[in-house]
Each structure stands twice: as structure tokens, then as C-alpha cells.
Length: 247
Image 1 (cartoon, helix red, strand yellow):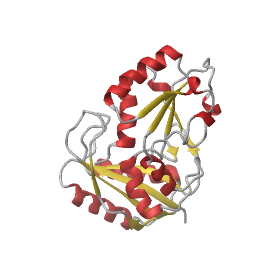
Image 2 (cartoon, helix red, strand yellow; image 1 turned 90 degrees about the vertical axis):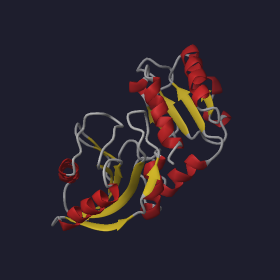
Image 3 (cartoon, helix red, strand yellow; image 1 turned 60 degrees about the horizontal axis):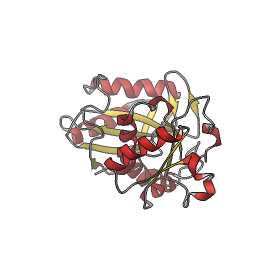
Image 4 (tube, one colour; image 1 turned 120 degrees about the horizontal axis):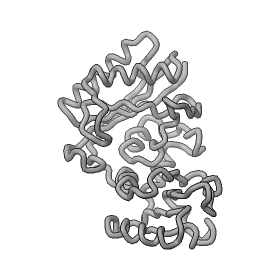
């Protein structure tokens, strides 16, 4: 049976009890077995849609369902527990994300596996590394523990790529005010990966098909496609928050 990993989150109502009930429901399903769970950790909310802290955790499942069927089960369970999908980053009683399904890489209209943000979010990696430290991320090709350790290296290096120099400089100035301890730079002005030491924690590609630097040209592990966020500094800040602030 395939091994799957899910993330649990919530900040509304009796979250501990909700987690316990959700895991019990999953384990009672004839095609799902709950193998192991992490400790629950309290984390700061990302964004400004809610000020209440979240409880986060991870669980290891063994399933005989297809990835799509498992996703439907998770979404139905969320709905049963009162989840209403209206506000991104908003308060919720239960959030269940499918992080990994064995070593499959899936890109469909309804499902992306591995979860596209699981490799840089501390509130995901901290509990996940507790139960899946040696599991290989199928795209990044390093372990979950190694992904987490990368985020702990100081200074945190956040590199922008794919933008015209002036645009990049203005964005860096804006971000630096919000995160003075983060080391920001522009990939195009660095010349090459060898001039950024150690390897950047994250390289945010904000380019277009016409950009000189292509997403595929960037190093595999730190690269992150944020091209949909070109004119949305707030969303870029959310990415930084999730990589930096978890408690």
C-alpha cells in the first residue's frame, strides 16, 4: 500500500479534539490506515486574515486509494468538520493537505503532488521531519530533514530572479524593510550561482516567458516559481513568512 503524508492545521474551535477526531475517522476508513502522527506545534498565522495562532502537525498514512480519491476523502472530512473555503489564510477548524503520495509527481487541474509549498514552509516541515525525516522529496531529491535544515541557515538568503534590474531593486528595498535580517539579492546581478555562497535558501522566479533568466536555468533545490505574484508584494511576503516565522 502506498505511503502518504498529510499536514493538519487549524485555529478555530477545539483544534486538538478536531485533529483527534479527524485521524480517528481516517483510520476507520477501510482503505486508510494511520501509521504515525507528529507532535502538534503552535504556529503564528500567515497573512493578516486571522490573528489566532494555528495548531499544526503531520500524519503518515498507508492507503489503497488513488491520489485523487484520497484528496476527495480529505476534502470531505474538512467539510464535515466545518471547513468553509472562502478566505485564503483565514481562520479554519481543520485543514488537511496531501503532501506526498509515495514518490509520485502529479500535476493535474485538481491535484498537485508533492504539495507545491511543503518544501519551504516551516509549519509543515517541522512536524513532517519528525515522522518522515529520511523520506526523499520526489522533485527536490533531498530528504525532508535536509529541506528543513536549509531554512535554519543564517543569514536566510532570498534571491529574486527574472525581473528587470530596477523592478528587482525596488522590490528588494520594500522587502528589506519588512525583513531586515534576511539577505536579499538579484540573481541577474550576481552573475552565476557560484557567486552566491552558500546556495540561496530560496530563489523566487518572478519572470515571464520573455525574461532572460528562465525558471529551468535556476538551481533545482531553492527555485520557486512565483511568476503569478509579480505585482503582489503581499503574497511574496506570505511566502517569506511561512519560511521564517513559524512560532
